[in-house]
Length: 190
Image 1 (cartoon, rainbow, N blue to C red):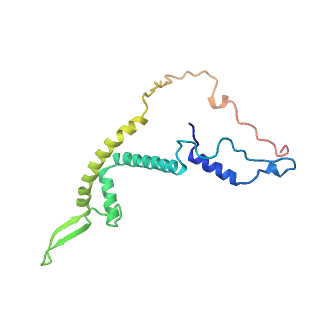
Image 2: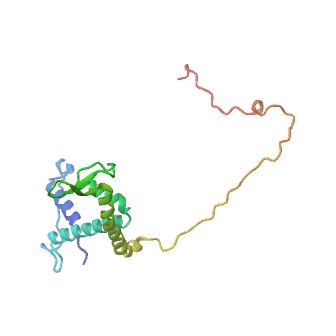
C-alpha cells in the first residue's frame, strides 16, 4: 500500500486551511474540495507522529555518519590543540610553552609543570585512537557511496612548435591583419 509522506500530508493540510481559490469568487464557479475513499488511516499504516519520528531518526543517523567520517579524517594534533584551547579558554595559536597547571609541595616549591604542548601531545593520543576507530566504523557506509567503476579518458596534448620562420615577403604581419573590431554606432543613430 502506498502512503503519503509526512511532509506531503502537512502541505495538504496547509492548502485545505487556505480557503477558496480566487476562481470561486467569480459568479457561477464553485471551487470545492473533494475527498475520495474512506475516512481515517488505512489499516497497517503508521500514524504521522511515528513517521515524523522515523524521519528524524534517519536525519540523526545521517548526522552521526557524517560526524564519524569527519572524525576518521581529522589530524589528531590539530583536533587535540583545538579541544585543549577550548577547555582552557586559550587562543588556538597560543604559545606551546604556556604553563597550564603547576604542582606545588608544602614548602611552596614547584615540582611539576604541565605545558600546553605536553597536554596537546597527551590528548592527541586519544584522538589518534578515535581516528582509527571512526575510520573503521564509517568505511562500510562510505564504500556504499563510492563509484563502482571510474572512467578515465585519455587526454592527448598536442604541441605545436615553430621550427623556423620563412619570410614570405609580404611585410609586417601586424599590417596584414584584418580589423575585426565592430564599428561603434554613431550617436545620431541611437
